[in-house]
Length: 403
Ligand SMILES: *Cc1c(COP(=O)(O)O)cnc(C)c1O
Image 1 (tube, rainbow, N blue to C red):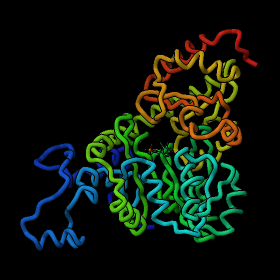
Image 2: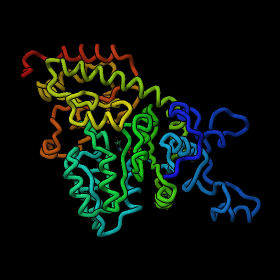
Image 3: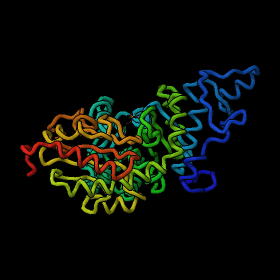
Image 4: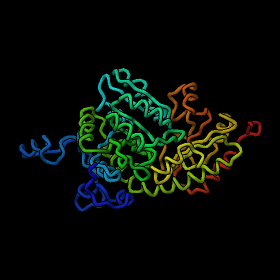
């Protein structure tokens, strides 16, 4: 695959500098937010040349915008991609990518543990269009290989997954998909380009909910797709007509957030492993899910394909939902909310957040305990977060068992 034509500097440096230069105006050191919906042309021939794509420039905000384009270039360079395009949300990135390439009668192979909204696309919307979807047990590579070999147009993966942080071997799956002539899409939201670069393994499209770690401040919605120009062009064309365009203000907030992505990921990862180990040793805690733990089933694969294990973990309580009800409201340094990947630690039961759309039976089938707590580690001091968990757990009444 052709590499991007930027000089290869470390991703931390790229996060700060990439994609901005040509968008700064009047000597400003920061990219401006261009709110203009349309662009004016006094020369009608010039206008025509830009409108027909023969000359660089902007015509109308649903198609392109300078601030949004700067965000796309920054992410493109972070992922080491040829091209990137952006969306109003992560779900728009996912649905637009699938709908660009799938036709009635086509088949998608994926895993059971994708993001809740993605799972709805697979279970509800694609079947309505006569597109077949086969969802395999997450982490069961043999089952995935078997289903891929039967033939499919798209293999759709997410790794690590939400909320039990399961890992799929990207390299192994790309090999199976290429043999079957299928495109491979990977949702890289949890890892971010700082920890994992699926394009290096031959993945065709990398998808992000920029709402999470990329923006990092829980104040803007966005999505993105990176990959070969030829493929990204097609997704862009679908999006420019379909209309799920990123807002320029959101793009600006993403650009600003991404400048500190490497620092935020470093702090979150450092804290996450310590918190996971702390929770594992706590008498009230039943199970801890974090790929950095040696007993996590995906640990060895994660070690190969990720530079660190990420800022997301989850855990279940011996005292079940009663224990969760007793301690969760007592956390001082955590937002009880449905998002993740913010500078503030964010926490919530999986049954209220990522898997609200599933029935208790479906959650059980997915291996998600009702008392599972999803914990998105922010950038606070590690000890403060552990102390906070410690004090909150003391509020669990002794009448709630620990067996
Ligand atoms: C949040 C999330 C999405 C959806 O993103 P939105 O920006 O909320 O539409 C997709 N995939 C993963 C892994 C997510 O965490």
